[in-house]
Length: 362
Ligand code: GDD
Ligand code: MG
Image (cartoon, rainbow, N blue to C red; front, side, top):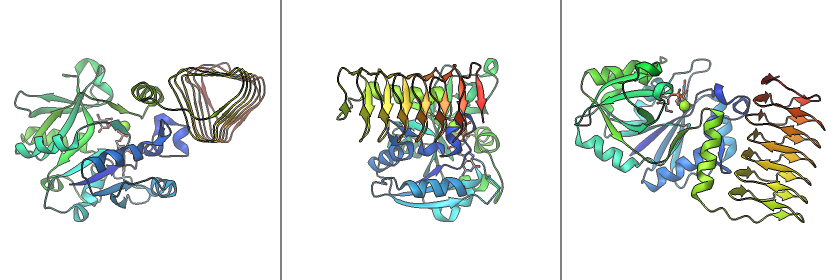
């Protein structure tokens, strides 16, 4: 089976970190999301992947050189300044995918362990044009919502309905098997939303089916969800730490440290802390519930709680970074600066004074 990964979205809700990397390259426990996806695809025997990208995401993904586990990979680029949405890229790859067999489509910002083989099996058992992996969530209003019948057919599909009018808690997990017949439903060269323009029509024509799936699933598109999946994985695996930790420092598990991490004396790191490659932590530093990307350095007596710090950030001495703060790549926080809850700092910005109200600093 071939697979198409949609990876050309803008990632607005993950700004400022998504200003400098596509969602598919966000590290999840120090490994890019796309790498986790390739690993899973390879396990299910997928040999060909097409990445549906735009100019920026293509450049970033190529530069990253992530392992592909033997999967043959090609790129299909949306036209410049004309994003094709979630449906247009499928039509664009019609020739590459061909008409011989069903294929897999994945949203590139999903972390999950959906069983692709089972999904394909369900698809092949029905007269389906599309079979959607469905996942149960508490608030379905941020997603595509499906009404599922006993025989596995989806009778109605509504993208992002108001919470009170959502008819079910089963949502589109951003993972589908499509039959080549899908190409007839998508006009060529246009921006098309498969969720708004195609799935409702397929439901009406009784050609849309669901595969309910109860495992691990998260769309990393929002900062709290991004932190959540990192914490969930820290809970699920035992990560061994081999780093230089100074005298009297305490590491509270679970944590994950990449290579080259150093920690000074009398610091308390964890629980739920992920430190990327070469992160340098000084003396008497407190960090918990946070993800820190590679190359960042944190000076003495600073504290970080519930935040995401980008690549190569510099945190001065005695700085305090509160919950829900997001610092873009190369941000510099001067000594003694406090950032209150929910402050976001644009890439490469230097912050010289404390910020006591939530919001963006650019
Ligand atoms: N190539 C390309 N071009 N890719 C795109 C474009 C585009 O114009 N727009 C979005 N994508 C990619 C994004 O990068 C992402 O991987 C995927 O398509 C879905 O787009 P999102 O913007 O993340 O959509 P969403 O999260 O609001 O909703 C979608 O995902 C939900 C599950 O997380 C929908 O499919 C929902 O129905 C679904 O429940
Ligand atoms: Mg999404």
